Length: 460
Image (cartoon, rainbow, N blue to C red):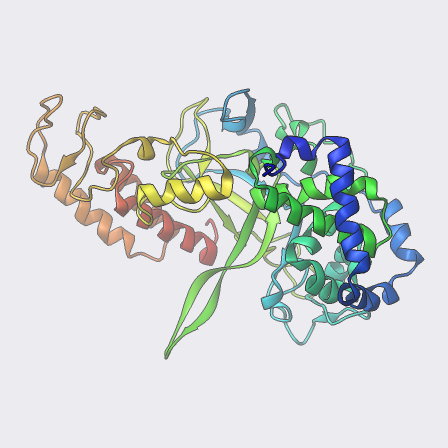
């Protein structure tokens, strides 16, 4: 029995062309699929072709220049690839990135509740409804912006398109539209602007060579659907395959606090209401014990008036340091699983399945990372062992442990943890980092608490 084609083979011209021809013929001969294509094609017009050829220029100022110089990009040939490091010593609590997404979307579940463009909560008194479909915006400004970056192309067909190619396909064609738009030159006033090294979606990892033949076939089928629907040249199908793989690796959930009903209890929870690709943030490597965290919806734009595109822009990602770092130290966030929430074996499995790497961060290399009763640092900061609550002396370096002082610090930190102030909880985190090992579960809970406060109260 012949083996399944590898991803390297699928990129060879002859095989790729044959695979595409076979899938295309299956689509064209499937009466049910062709029937589903009709309502979409009936709504297409010459304007759709024009939008592909003459899009609005993409804004290059995705990064805030006031923070972009705090980090720099390192390029390597190792498994780390490209990653961000601190360009200088950065204190805990510092904002190192403010970034708008290259492409973003509101999840369909929340349509009508939040603006389809900026993800702000919609005020019924000033909301704007698209004339061509049921999409709702918070202001005329957002409607204009959305049309310029994809809605003008997808207006009236996105729901039917979603039913045919899924969320993956809709995101793919929207991203392709933005990719085809010319990019303005980056500002020249930044000495170390990481946007100089970022060329957009084509610059992001796709891990295609690690994906299964079944995944590649699924991507390819979606790509052929899209070119068939929109009468696009088949030559772009490899690009559409790559975009789908890149979205799978690099998309962030855009979270905000919303009211959630759980049985008879109403509570506010941190929920992903949208998703976006952030070019600079995608360059940050993962750690299960990260030194930075991402938050959304924490800064107001210049215009505060509702209905005028003002207020909090929920799409802006803000990356905040959760501990102090030295110059040259890698900036790491958590891709999802992190200490204090998920056991090491489960973390490593999830990261391998979704992001195709074997996590070797400090806490994953430590075979005792899940021993909850050994969670304290040695007072002399030796990294050879972790201490339990009853240890009076570090067994490695023989340093005496002042358990009374440590208990006092714990009590103060626990009190600060209950505060509604981001400043107080950040102080709690610093105190806990002084006494607990990097993989202690209690630090994971503190990171979560701090991220929740950043979401609800901003960075003041």
